[in-house]
Image: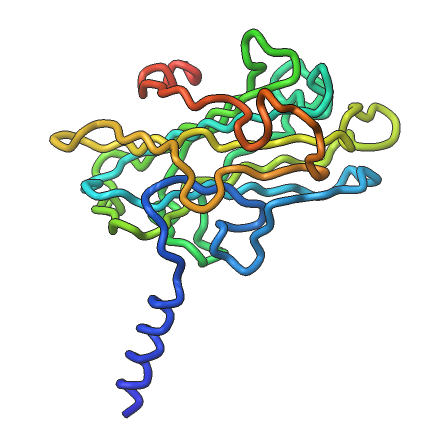
Length: 248
């Protein structure tokens, strides 16, 4: 009887999960199907402590048989004419070291599936988008080592964690603070590339949202009829080679 109850509970859990087509998701604190997920994050900018965590995830398409790596492309647009110093996160900028990538979901949350199981390594890179004044881009590359026991097929229609993007609150207030923490921003996950080893197709690009592929910072009330959030930047496919070149 106990075994039947456990099986029934498992079936209920599966049936309660959202059903989305293959695509990408972005959320503060968790993937969109999680209980702690939120679209909008606000911060009083009165402290230099703490970290703001974005979760990138994806609903798997068919045919992913031996995934070895992911790449992510995230664009950020400020409501200001120029990108505020608070969002300049690269080397030589106002807040170097305030951006980190994390691919370890072994300590939770456990809402979506953890494909990497703590075995992935990689990094993130920040840069200003060419021909823009108020936008920047975060690119991440991470992979399992060759021969990893975690390389396996993905279940079609199941949502998997891809990575966490951590933006800390250093230099938000006080002496040496970087201006612009309180300015509004729109953050868009434009693409997740699923990389596979041969003989599978090497690249599968996901650009369509499954539930929601964007988040907002300090709300988003800016009137921008030509490029309203979440359509910050049209997704543009990138090759695996071009992404790897960022880390040479």
